Every structure is written in structure tokens, then in C-alpha cells.
Length: 533
Image 1 (cartoon, rainbow, N blue to C red):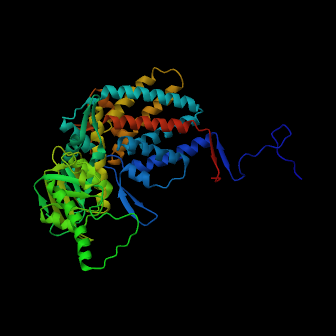
Image 2 (image 1 turned 90 degrees about the vertical axis):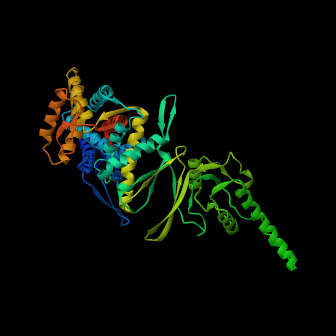
């Protein structure tokens, strides 16, 4: 029998993991993490910028999606590598915080890991790299803050440029100028002012998919759009304004909690019983009519007899709405959600300026869309997105959502940066100068950070089919010569960019989050896999 392996002390080693578990250490760890990070970055790099191409995603359930939105692509990927999962979390963090900038964030993080792999192979200690990256990130933040341009909520032209930049390269780019105006107006409408500045809750801007028409016909409704068929043909289909009442309770005969039997022996008793029931319903309908309300919404059912009485009095009623839909109507119109007809008074009623019902033909048949315009006092606003239905409509909404978030963040922070990679190349040149003052090995990491920053403009150049080195050298030269607002234009060449702005907060968060993720991966000295791969 062969002797048991030991650790030199004569004792057999203690096994703390399964025999199938693999433990990777040393340089192999670096290669494992770097290769996964670089592969992830290369996956998204081709979609970046105005000349980025789309990815076709084929899901396990047979559905397909065509998109170049970084957040969508990352969300659909089924990743198993730990480094790749860290990048998925990074993408989610960027999307949740800013709603845009995911692709640029992933590309930068990937390049940081690529630079790390080169330096680690030269025996640079991981903590030296981490310290260098963190110092470079701190310096980058100071450089970008000095490079920011202020913007106010009244500066519609600059905010529209932010929206256009966010939509560039997406499926809505062809009509970006038209949609940018709508996005800015929507953000301005829901913005609220407090002691610290403006706050824009993008949840108060809804996207309704019309599914027909041309994308350029997209319009803004200061109110709400409800996709629901009317219960009666004789309900009014257009009203020129009035009061609104919103119920969270059913408008019908209340059912008892216990089953009960009523014994009726004569026709008079039956007539009396039916009359009493009719009187209860008439009373409910009369209370609504007497309130002066012209629109009635209910999250529950409405008895057909009440519905007919309301229609006869020129009142439009919509029953069996989702609870969230009823809450949206109340929010838009200023009404209060009430749970009993006796609660109707002037304080619970909301107001609207125009109601119009439009009937559209779809694959499922005719469908009604109710437009409820409230006006300047509306608690929320809706962008009615025209264009084809299905996956293309989803992509339109995604592009608008990115633009809306960029505009909202710009209003809240009050700062924007020149687009086209200008901020990144400016920071990269400043970081190189800063690296000259560092005597230790951290300098190598700081220089690697600068090269990673340049991956943003070089990706824009490469995706346009131009030579990366030539374009990068030309852009560096222009920035060195103090040519402000120079960046990579839509042709992939270094040029002065007129009115091309991007949200400063989105750029800051992308760089900081990417740096944190890279530093977190660099602190890993072993990869332990229970699967043995």
C-alpha cells in the first residue's frame, strides 16, 4: 500500500472540499478572470456608439430579440463564469442608478481588466494595481468636474442634445430630434423643485405602445392613455372636460359574507324584493350623477344597470381596471381613490380637460384606447409611442427610456459633459500627466487606467470602420492644442462637436462602478469551483 501524502509533518492532510472541487491560484487566476472580462467587453464593444451594430438574441423558449442596448443584452445572457456574473451585476448597477451608459461602463471595466492582466504578468502586485486604479479614479473625478458644463431645467436645447446623444445608435435615431423634444417636455413636466434643486421622478412618465403609424407621429399626452374596451356602445366617446371619480370598490349590490336563503311566496314579495334592489342601485347611480362627475373609473366591477344610467346621463364609466391603473388615473387627475359612493365630495373628485376614445384595428380585433388629457396640472404624463408593434415597439420604448433617464439625471445634477469620447480622452491625458508625478509602481497602474479610458473613443472609431490609431492620435493632438469640444463624430473622425452633450452623472457613475468592479476582481487570489471546471 502506498504511503499517504503528507504536508511534511508526518500527518495526512485534512480534506475540506470535495475531491471534484478545483482550486485555481496564482497567475492562472488572473488569466481566468481577465479572459472572461475581456470576452464580455468584446461582446458589447461592437454595439457602442452611433455606428454600433445590433445583436440578435435567440432565447431558449424560441423567442428572438434584436437590440444594441447594453442593459438588454446583459440581462438576457445566461452566464456562469464568476467574473462574467460580476459584470452582469455591474450592468444592473449602472442601469438602476442612471438608466443609461451600460455599454460604455462594461467596455471600460473590461479594458481595466485587460490592462491588469498585462501588468500582473509582469509580477506587479494586485494591491499595487488596486491602489493605482483608485488614485487614478479620484484624479479622473476631479478632472471631469472641472470639465463639466452647467445646465438648467429651462435650457431645453442642451437637454434635447442630451436626449439625442442617448438615442444615437438606437432604433429611434432616425427621428431623434422629434422624440428629444417630447422627452424633454415630459421630464420638465414631472420635475419637482425642492430646497436642493429639481427632482425628476421618471416613474411619472409612462410609455404607451400604440402599435400603428409612423414613429415620427409619436406625441406627448399630459395625462394618461388606457388600453381597454368600453363596456357599452352608448357610452360617450368624447368629453370636453369635467370631474373624475375613481373607485377602488365594486359598484353593485353588496354580497353578504354568509349564504342565505330568502323565501318568497307571492309575486308582490318578489316585486318588492326586486324594487328594493333596484332602489339601492339607483341610489348609487344618483349619488354619482349628483356629484357632477363626467368620468367614472373603478378597479372593480360596475353593475350593468348603473352603467346604463350613467351612460344615459352622458357619463363615461370604465370598470374592472387594474388597481395600478386606477391609481394612475387618480394620480393624473388629482382625484382620491375612494372605497364607497358615500365618500364622494369635492375633495375626492379630480379634473380633466379632454377625454377621447379611439378605436384601432389590431391582430386581436378592434380595440379601444382612451385618452384622458388633464393638462398642466396632471400628476403624470404619457408618451404615446407610434410605430410597428411587437419587438420593434419594445426597442423604441427602450431608446426613449434611455433618453428620458439621461435628461432627468442632467436636470437633477445640473451638469453635462461633451460627448463623443471628449471627456474620456481629456481625462486620459490629464491622468498621464498625473502619472509623471508618481515615483512608485502605482504609476504603471495609473498609466493603464489612462489607456483604458481611451478605449471609449477608440471603440467609436473602430465601429465606424476607421483606423483606431490614426483617429486616437488626431484626437489627442486636438485636445493638447486646447481645442475644446473635440470628439469622435458620427463619421468616426476627430472633429469639433457642436451641441453634443451627455449626462455627467451617467459618465461619473459608469467610471466609478467599473473601477470598483475591476478592483474587486483584482483582490481575488483563488477561484474555487465546486463543479471542477
